Length: 123
Image (cartoon, rainbow, N blue to C red; front, side, top):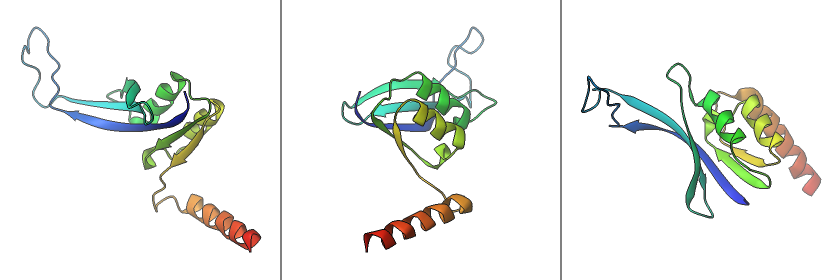
């Protein structure tokens, strides 16, 4: 597969977890999912349920490891700005675009310095 693969987590509001005792679902039940979407093909490539005691950060590498991403560009929101996640993407021979929040000051400073060097070299 080539092209852009967008990875994002979503809280599924209103899903039910039915069982013998709760035939219409449990009130307040919430389901977090992380999905991979192929922009070029308009299809979902996969989903991983986020464990109740974890968050998207632990689920994203599981999803990445289940996909063939060689040559793709993976996009993730700021939740994906983690060394383990970017390393997993690189190990799958893919590139990435990840949002960075202002609270990641070290990363922002390094990026600004790199961009400054590029600007100077282009002059």
